[in-house]
Length: 192
Image 1 (tube, rainbow, N blue to C red):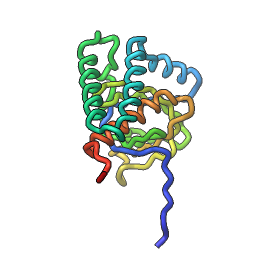
Image 2: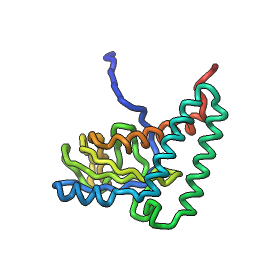
Image 3: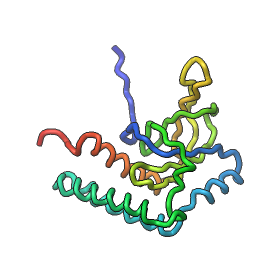
Image 4: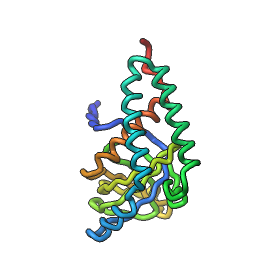
């Protein structure tokens, strides 16, 4: 039996997210995507604070899992409160996103699409993470696009690698993935 050597840079999870994507074919498309992805100052500040708190909480997991879990829950509660209390112009416009199950990591993602993309096509990806509704904007390159069934009517499974230049959004995504992984495993790291 041949051993398969799979090398991944980041942990991958299946997660439900809001997703909006568009093809980037020119520098003009890239500028339009960048402008539409720009966060308001308040949202950007909340994202920075959330990232710093997540880093501190993650460092606590080995020392005090209960405290880390409590801080994580408190942060989620505050994020949900902020999502309901902030004026609409500060929120991620959820009605623009399609909620779907994706396979996602810090380096790329896979998702169902209604159209076929050739490998090498650049995509602008706007994600709304659940339950926090934090919006992330990333650019990526299609690495594969396969029909979901023999009939292309059901759509395609698109795989995308994130491009360099997405580091801040990727860091936020990695924090989200770690939190989701801990939530899915119940915060347990095995027998201690």
